[in-house]
Figure 1: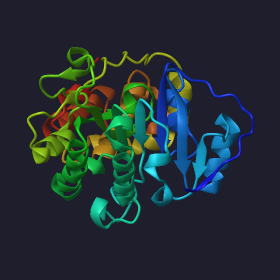
Figure 2: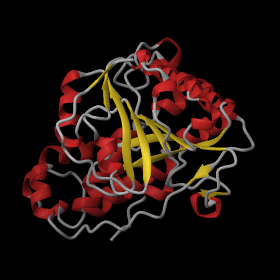
Figure 3: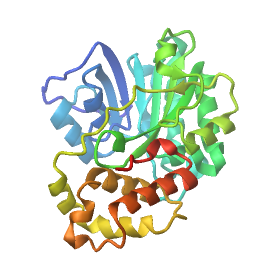
Length: 315
């Protein structure tokens, strides 16, 4: 078992549920879960990240060291086990070695091993594995299928969804979530799942994963509709800070054949935030009107990305 970090005496806040934070890093998941969950146990290998974690949440529950040395029988039972496992072997910016050959993303299997060692009685009723969207589509979905079936073998019902920060903040950061619930655990299925894919959470990547999983008990997890973002406040400061993106967005609008989803989301971020002011900004050097820009963007979303839920309302 890796060395348990000493506590700095800082009080931890939490809700009515308990969580385990695997690959905790500096504690972003622990922070996000605080209104509902108290983190009972966390683990990361990086000393610098662990130091940040201890400074914010205390160290009495943080285990610093390799996950390969963690013994599942020594971990406390909890309501949720969360794993934001390394993305390097699944990301377009990495080498795409996947879960089988990658030295980092393959640590997903250490998480599964630990769950196995916790035995059925102590195993958390809810699991969540978070990563880049490549988790769903690497090797045409075959990598995800093996990860999905491993949780099914442990007695969980599961499904995947993609959530993008762009629906809440002026930044695109799509992430995939494999969410599983132990069979027999009561939950509000009518509220938390749908009967069919939802365009906001189940785009092409999720559909690829679903088809490859080929499981009739797949769960279509959904969330409440995100609130409509206020696009009228702070437009001028945003235009100034995003000035360098204007020219790239124009080029994107002129190229309806774009297939890079990251670029598409970048375009939506800029246009949706600045649609009223874009044409007025003298330094933009735009070669088209705002209306044409939005129209061309919608064509890309509909015809190339096949995701009409991301269309921008033309004004």
